[in-house]
Image 1 (cartoon, rainbow, N blue to C red):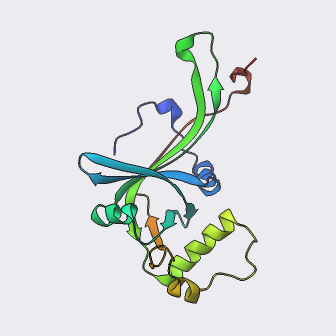
Image 2: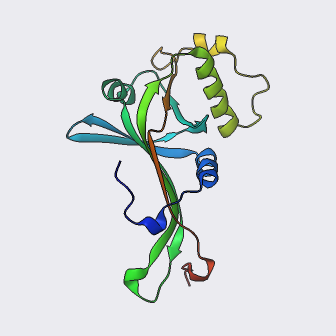
Image 3: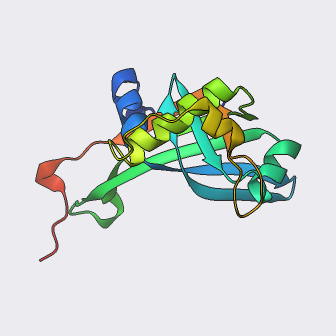
Length: 176
């Protein structure tokens, strides 16, 4: 894998990276529709057991593309504001970003799928449902849109890089 050239921006703090991936809600899933045509879309995700999990309908373009070519790049980032400098060319952006390369594998095991979907519910709707999600429900549920089971994909990072330009409170741009 190609190394980050701007070495001053490398974030090697595993705890910070794990916390960031756990807390953020949306990432960009980039796929190869064809050799000449990339395909990227924002998706909700959970970071659990050191993997990225995404979910969605059991049919559609994402499923077709991933079935043909499971290699993906998954990116999560947050921009914190503009760093001001008296020299225009030295103005910058405060941010943290994580880029993950791996393969998106369709989760077949109903137990794992149920646990992942429970993670989604806890992350996006904490304490909303009074009873835990059951494997029987996940196994039997079919979407009214396409009559398919929900698709859950796991991305086990083969390569992960993180870059950051931390907030510098004294130099952050403030509009007048």
